[in-house]
Each structure stands twice: as C-alpha cells, then as structure tokens.
Image (cartoon, rainbow, N blue to C red):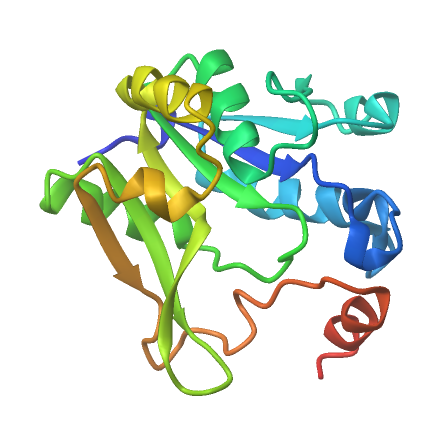
Length: 204
C-alpha cells in the first residue's frame, strides 16, 4: 500500500476566477472561512504534507501555514501549471491534486485513489463521479500522480499542451468512481460563481 506519509497534497488556487468576476476564488468565504483554508483542513488529515498553488494574494495564502508556490508557467496556464509547479516542489513519491473550489470532496478521497493506484500498479489515479445527468465522469483535477511523471509533464507543457486528459491519457491511469451508497451527491460539485458557492453553503 501507499503510506499517507508518501503523499503530498496540493490545493490548486492559481486560476483567474473569471467566472466568479475575477475574484481570487480560494479566498472567498465558505461557512465562515476562505475556501482554500476549508479545503486545506479537509485535505491535511489525508496526506503527509500539503502546499498551495496560487498566483496572487500570496501573503493571504501563506497565512494558512503551508508553503505557497506560484505557477512555474506564465499566463495562467490552467490546472496543469499547478500540477507541474507542485511536482517540481514535491518531496514525496506521490502528489495528490485538489482544486480550491470543491469544498465537500470526500474525506477518504486520497485513501481510495491510493488504493486503486497500488492495486492497478498505475502511474495516475483519477476520481470519477456521477453528475447531474446521471453519467459518471472523470474529475481530472482530482488526481494522484507519481513523482516520476514530472519529466513527462514538462515535455507535454513545453510542447504547448494544456488539457489534463490529453496528458494523463499518455500514462497508465486508474479511474476511481465515487458512486457508492455513502458517497455525497455534491462531493465533487465545484462552485464557479458566487451564487453557486452560496447554494453549496446552504446545502442545496
């Protein structure tokens, strides 16, 4: 099995927040605390180390007490820039990625990804969840990655690649469905607008 101490978690808070009016999404309040801090508190018990990938308001993120790293790629290159930044800073054999705007992700997310990666001898384990239309779809920003994938991701992004699926498709990936009876229906609901964030807060 993969030990918790062998996994570093990164919270992806480096986006532009364009659908939220350009605000820094990770610093928006959710149940009385910034989204990214809420995410950190949910993730920390599941991993050995944690860090945050952010591109603005770095001081605010640093106040959460974990290392904060801006994108190594310029121009808000999307989640893969966060993957790349974190892999470069990661000191454990595995990295798990979690976005800052999905505050209800499962408490056993990392354990289930790690189990699947171990059992299937995979390089990547990716969460999948049932969406509103009843279909189970992959959630590419929830990934457990082997540290050795850094070189591959450097090549992919240097070649102009930006889509997570296009990169993970090059590697042995275990897809982990979170659709068991006890799995929350909103576990992977990401708040793209302030209205959606308030809905999530109210449990709707």
